Image (tube, rainbow, N blue to C red; front, side):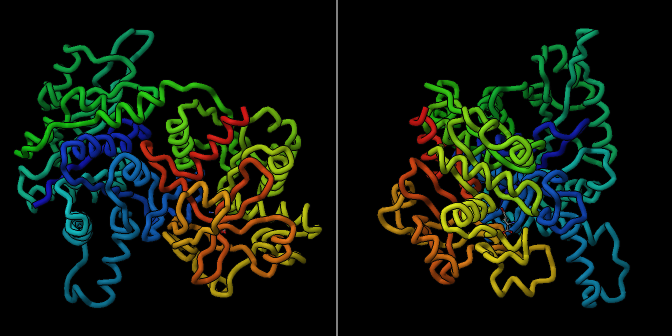
Length: 533
Ligand code: GLN
């Protein structure tokens, strides 16, 4: 029988509920328990795949090709759990299922209501995750902030869960903010009290509070929170601001959060062991031997969350190379305005991430051309690869007007274009090439050296592909097609000879990088940047 932990958030959003959930899972996993996590998102979109990154942040892609919330990225980076389409449920999905069932006549004669039908579907989805994962502990993060209208059915389902799974198998954790008011030099507990009050009105009494705070909480403050919120004092956990998210499992372990959870469930397990994490991740992160500056030339630069997994993967490569990576976020439209020289000339490496739509494309292409000519280590991801192909075709193959048909449908040289099967696609949701595909690596290439194997599998999220009509021409001018999806003969990796590190992938390696196992493409990218320095 699985145990269930529901994690809710209060007071304000952006407190780091996803990272807190992943960190709790991490300390439980370090006690030899099998964990999995699930995110419940209150919005009505079926998935975030059709949302603008400025609305939602990154869309995280799972092995099985689900487009999910970026918190699933934290779950996979912190733990061994593999995420699937079952691990993220949205209001849109829940209603979609219930309404289709109603149309089929499955509920014939009945009135369909939030309780019990919607809440029932939510609970079924949680139980499904428990069943598929066979985890000892399922952590369920409820998106949004307590008090929002939208998340009410999820909270109601969480409340009801105690009736389904027996009281001792369910635990509620509430993440809140305990602000420090500078002018009064005081820490304020009132927002937390109110947030817990709201939760109790819904029928949920939290067992544990995690208090985000910039100052340490005194015993007195903890006692006050404990008394007013009806939570045992040792279960009032503080979560101070830290330099790296990877310290948070250690912060929680230091307050025996794992012990508190296990004793609630009546579980006995091995003591927690986070020594490897501490030594191989946290200590290395804070002992860099040099600094490298990496340009990320993107179009969603203004939002930290838009390239979440990429920034994390750069940090993982920093850890593995023991360097400090300073990311310079460069808006590709600025490159169009000022030219690449001005913005890139002092940097040690250039990364061009994925994206959709024509805005800023020419800036990306110019940035790649600059890295190519000046032998600056370059890593292109998805759209970044497509732009690398365009740059190469235009400037080394004499295909002046070369482009992707995404940006110029009538281009004379469509070096990136749609496969025929994509041409007839009408729906935009969930219809791209999504999820894991195998890729064969050509021997004696940079890709082979980086991966140290000839068969890999990586995750995709794109509609356009390299156009094989141009393969011979580009190859004859020195572009190497070093990774191929053989079944359909699709180009997955391109690279250049005579350059210290110029490689680009049609897939998204960033989704598989971990703090203690940097992805090889990122690892070698940062190594090349450090060597250049
Ligand atoms: N817009 C491009 C495509 O659909 C690239 C997508 C991406 O970078 N994820 O193929």
